[in-house]
Image 1 (cartoon, helix red, strand yellow):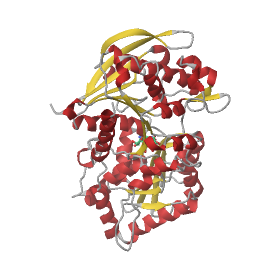
Image 2 (cartoon, protein in one colour):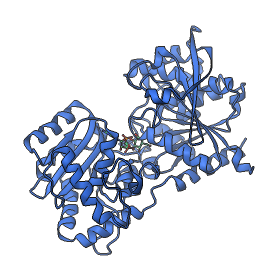
Image 3 (cartoon, rainbow, N blue to C red):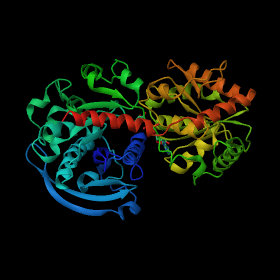
Image 4 (cartoon, protein in one colour):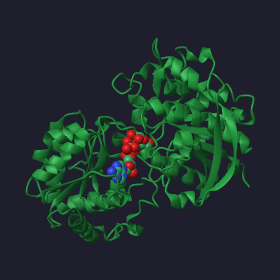
Length: 489
Ligand code: ADP
Ligand code: GLC
């Protein structure tokens, strides 16, 4: 085997499709390991054994063993069980402990989540030692795994796993794992010197798990170049911009891809009429009519159908949508929303549906199969985010020949080239400032092209489907980073 085949990478994070997914982190934790495996790495993904993992997956897992692990300042010990399964060459090790992971949802609120992910981070490293699997690189994701680089260089430094180098990827800086210094000290059992400003401390009273991880990781990545720059500024830095500027030498942006096997319109069992670039122009209207039928919208494939698939949170720019909602609608337009989250937005979208029967559908649910049908059946997809580290929905939309309408921030800016009507280039419609009128203008520009110049619209659909949104390139950039770190050993 070549030298490359020996790269051993452990992914540590709080969710992974198909076991548990609440957003894009789950997609990345699934797709990137698969892509790395195809490029010759040996990858193990370590995540919690949540009660909500579907039984069909639990049935296929095998129990590898268990041990007791001390965790807290007072030496309190906890049970750690390890369950394992394999999927397409990637090994998944699940950390079991009923006290922490028996809830119906992976995230339940910071009060429970902080102890839960202190336990998880330490248990993940202990499990690697228990399994005698010693990775070259430990690739951690978001605040839930941010203690891993700190444990690695302190408590675990003299143990076998201590030889690994660490990477911490920021998928979303808004969530950081902040609590009182006393609470974090108690649950981590880590020494006092770490609770100073360079590591965990962020104010006289508070400690921040992400901050500590960012300080101790050998490399920090985030999921687009633009977001890597943005988070070093006050507006996007979520209070950590100074800390990130201090560590900027080790900060890199690597844009996400999507799994092009799962998101493959030509071979998507969830679509009423699968299609590829050769027949998209005939098949999309069929998918549109099926979507209209499923959602109780007026069946008419001439309508401009505008979709939104999103967690309904402030991050996603929904207050802009809210402000201009009535103006988005006219006799040529239908709007489809799929999402759950903040009751404020859920209520607003339900209201618009009730006021516009047959023209608006607000599907307030998490629904994988409907998501596929929306990506296929809509003409355009809105992603007007306030901030967006990468964003996957615009990538999926493009792959399905659905034109994205996005705000120029984070990964949206890096992946959607604005349409240029003079040169007939670009992938979608964009706007820059966070203003509702600009969103409306972008939607109107899209609608106008769709209704009055279908030939150019169709060319954009084909350009979008041809765009490379796979993991291939980005996985290579991670490999280069892993190799750079391995060479430093
Ligand atoms: P984020 O991680 O911030 O939520 P991303 O765009 O990175 O945003 O990823 C969102 C992922 O979650 C996409 O795969 C999208 O299709 C999926 N998704 C979001 N909301 C829903 C929903 N209500 N039903 C099904 N899938 C959803
Ligand atoms: C986060 C971000 C999203 C990104 C995803 C995967 O949830 O909000 O922009 O695509 O992580 O990296």
